[in-house]
Image 1 (cartoon, rainbow over the protein chains, first blue to last red):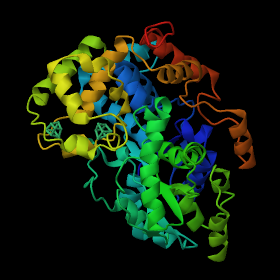
Image 2 (image 1 turned 30 degrees about the vertical axis):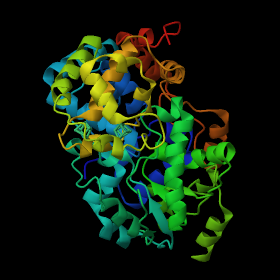
Image 3 (image 1 turned 135 degrees about the vertical axis):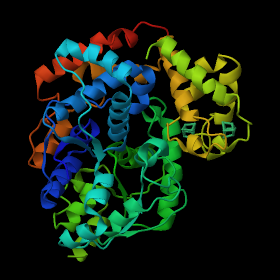
Length: 296
Length: 164
Ligand code: SF4
Ligand code: SF4
């Protein structure tokens, strides 16, 4: 595996720092060579910025990639949105020489230029490809006994022409990684449907966004799970903050804990929910913490 | 991509859009269409005949989930087309107030979601430094981000006082 730099994005460090801490703890436990990607900015968010102005989107994204190129490390993302922005920008700039030249014109104002010498990875496809579920099962110390509603998130697998991670209707790779921790991935209707946050919908049209989320939460509730697991802090925020907003606006209370995969894996490495910041979510379900204690 | 580039992208997809048989697979698959006034099939139809779609609020109800694009029997790049139409709209000065605000945050802080005091406390509680290793901690890096955003004229694009 190539050496990695950890790209944080915005929501992880600035809203859900538990995800950042859990990720770093897990990378160390898995003996992965990583460093912080110092001075990185917003990816920038694919929904709004990509559709606003492609030049701005590519220039800002490529600066983040260049910081990693300078260290000769691949970029590791822990967010589907960051992955979409950085991996797509990286590919487009590698493939299109004229485009690269026009972006380097802007980067020249800060004395930088895009080379195209590294790759952008998402923590889930990296774990699956470079380690695999079996190896992870061998490395964990305390299998977790939880029933999980897995949410892949759209941009991890779509558009499939670019992601090349197989089926977008019925993928299994992420489920396998869930089960590698000892947890059970419970099937539920509309599992592959969007959480409703992306494309700038959550930021500008909250009611519409929450209507989509409410649809997913109702399906998940019916499935009777202990928690929701994602691999995207924006989906994470939508599921966690969104439950609080739905309670306030629609009077529906779901109370389902939300974990990023690195937090689930952190539990399987023996860390406490507090060490992984799971208790810093808006939705804190005491029953869930009791379940975790019981499986000790 | 400036406006002309976006128009070119749209021209590229519009030959594709012409192959649309209005089957409705896109609308039927759309998570947004189930709960909002957005009808993906209609956007495709309007985009190929006229420009009315440009001022249509429904354009902003797409979460860019790509389900329609994956399922379209004619392999029309529907989501990419919606993104291209958005670009033209934005360059026409039509930006939703909340999106303008998020853009200003990136110009000011280098983050669309900047840190706040409550999260600094959470970070400390977790034994982490109050500021992450991002532009938040490195003022020179933030200056670089602001410089390239200016070079791209992003500040002008999202400046207040334009038509909303
Ligand atoms: S799925 Fe494709 S062919 Fe069918 S209506 Fe939508 S754009 Fe047209
Ligand atoms: S990409 Fe947009 S239009 Fe297409 S299905 Fe998803 S939300 Fe609907």
